[in-house]
Length: 460
Image 1: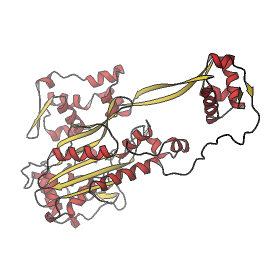
Image 2 (image 1 turned 180 degrees about the vertical axis):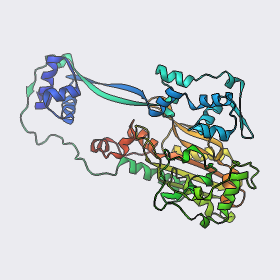
Image 3 (image 1 turned 45 degrees about the horizontal axis):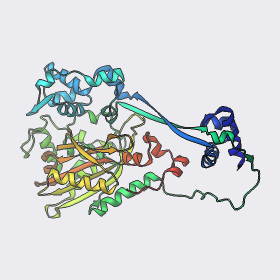
Image 4 (image 1 turned 60 degrees about the horizontal axis):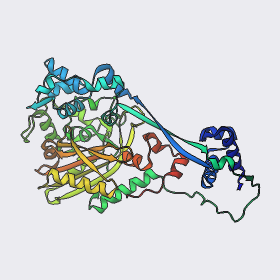
């Protein structure tokens, strides 16, 4: 049997050692990774070797996870605050940096009830223990720890090559000749980056469903980014450690929003005409005028609502663009990321309609199974987290948030009563799933090998 020089050298190495890993063969033979792979494939097709992939997963605590180990989970710290006498939603959000997460998770676990802005412990909550902290300390990691960003994981894959009995005994010769008739591999040609391709595909799916595209500025006023979405001015999300504030221009002229700015003030202070009690504080116009790099594309949705008149209904809009947050860069977080935001505005809409739109969109995007899980967001009620099931590892992963905008958001912006379905989805998660990546930073590194090996993506 004649073998190419590289395949011959690899077989001789295997006859001496019985088995080697790809990286070991590279070092022993002085060959690059693709050359060793091609040699192994040639030997495998001849029945001279067998190859097997081995994957090793390592898990470690993120900065958020370290903080939970140090200080306790947000939901359990909330329980301790209520036990200590702090029971107002506003007090809790002031005391806890991640107050929204704490409230959402505590309600999810059945630990608390909220009535008229006051938090009380249920019977289950009075006996609550900090299981999340204990699990992180014991390194008993679960799906929830990954979805909450408390734990990150990395998978390293290596191929092991072992010689077969045929490979040990068959007579082989080193073919030094050049075969002009041998089949050649197709040369690598240029193609669109897989992330850009997925973004374009996501845009096309929304357009197919009859949505109009909306766009907005990266730099917006705090009024649009926070106040219009009923986020109080003392909310932790508005702190410097979460948000990029602009030095120049420092402020926007909020008078251009007309009556909407005044209505937003009233809603924050006493609920205005919505029936809400509001947040019960003196709203500061200068704080609302401060410019930020938008922390979510929902700021574009808020501006779109300002433009609509009652005769425009029903209406459906989507946007796919960048948002910015003051995040520590790691495998699951970046300070700049793409988000898909959407709103449906009408008079007779329900949560069932919201679920239907999301299921139809993700079906068109090739996701076999999604679910919506109840959660808490300050500007929607009902609120739900959107998750998809990953067949490769048998786990559910978060794609984004959704819900029905509260009257405190809708009425000041529209000026009339209507129902608004809304969502904000992470395009990065879709791209990572398509390219089988575990580190979000790989989406932006323009690694030639990853781009070449990632197939042209189309929904299944």
